[in-house]
Length: 133
Image 1 (spheres, one colour):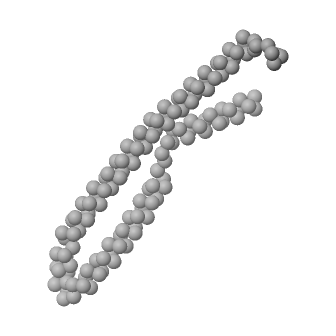
Image 2 (cartoon, rainbow, N blue to C red; image 1 turned 180 degrees about the vertical axis):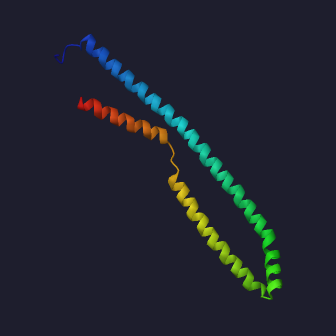
Image 3 (cartoon, one colour; image 1 turned 120 degrees about the horizontal axis):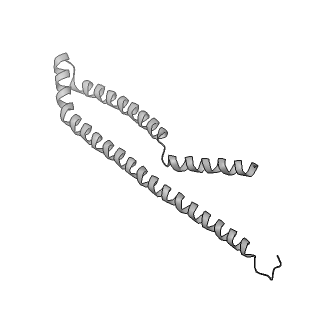
């Protein structure tokens, strides 16, 4: 093909077909990413909403129960109320650290956009197998 002559109809058709296939591929990947983005957003919203409600319920419950429990324990054992309150605070801090460690491990294990990454992996494998053939 000379630089001054137009491409043959077969070359134009194959280039057009290739561009159309690439455009359809990108559109399909974009739709999949959009769907998985919505799903990931729903998961994170539900998780954070449940966490905030549970946290609020525990805080309010303990704010109401803690003074009564400190008084009951101090009165029953003859201890001063400040020692009972400090022991309770230590227990709560320890439990809070354990719960934060559990939350960290769950967040590390959560996978978002899993299907998109699986599709990209399959595409790479398919391209590698076609390249070798």
